[in-house]
Length: 452
Image 1 (tube, helix red, strand yellow):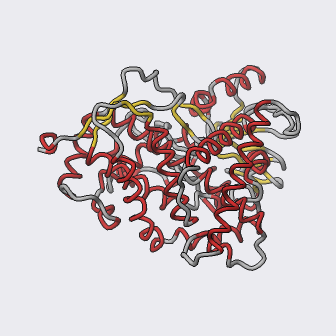
Image 2: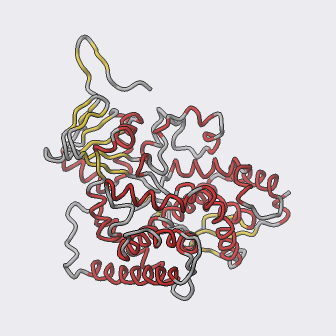
Image 3: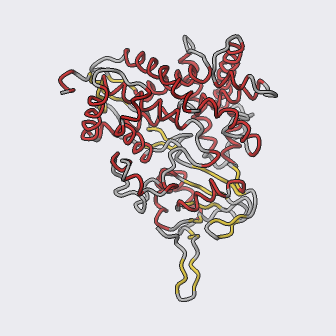
């Protein structure tokens, strides 16, 4: 699609379109239904002004080229801004919140832990932990699978990146992570968050949860100092000039960001599969053809093309990072339009992935749109499940490996259908995009007959 820039009878048509309606009305719409609001303005134009304050005007970017400029070619002109300031209250100076040279250094320090060779080494841990988890499932039972996925991905991230195994404290750490995520989300999307020093019930609970996470992180550091295992934590410990607090901040960052997003994406994937049995049938045919009765290995992932397509399509419909925020740190041009310093830019992968200009029947679950030939028609920056640029998700390849192995191991043993008591499915935009109220599913063993 060409940019919405035209010269009609000598009149310049700006690519910035101002949203209609009163400012308060639009604000309340966004607060009430953020996903619906972002999707509702897709058709208005490439850049939509939401008529916020003059000091910090806000814009929604709907065009891949505008997104490329902000996240890639002109990224030095932008900072994360308010989202980082709120997150910093929880994760300190972790990779999610630092800016500039500090962030670049942290990212370079962590990259070796996510190289292809290391990801391949992590695969057996994923397989072992997933197999152990699914051994506890029983035919005919109902399970809150979002909790199962949370515990599984938390266990994996701790063992692979920190060389730690959860034992009796597993539930306590998981609850602390969950509370921290909910607290952070409320503050991030509240127009005026209450100061942390006010002793509200939420603030007090958050302080307790952060105490658990800090204690856990310190324990990881102490354990790793006594070992010589090649983990991310070991690599960070060997860095010159890294203080203990920065290590703790990075551990808490990875605990929160490194498992919750994958777990939520897995929940959405199984919900989608339960609603599209024809996709599940086709998928199981691939699994039986490639694997038969044996468990998957890392080397099998490249052969499981339809598995990858299901994962990619699930991320299209329900991207964990549903919103990306940037603030201009200087006057800047986007698509040739001038914007002042402190302007706020919103990029919503959730709504972008539903743009009919880039995706045919965008609300439909069609894994085939990511088949090798079909995927070529998707513009590069119209699909952003992991963001883009130097602040894209550092663990995207790790997360995809982990998720697809878990998907395969589960599908080889069970079918999942929505439990009769499951509430209507609603998307809840938190720190990542989750299923409101959780996902309860009925477990059905996959009998030998179902393989034929």
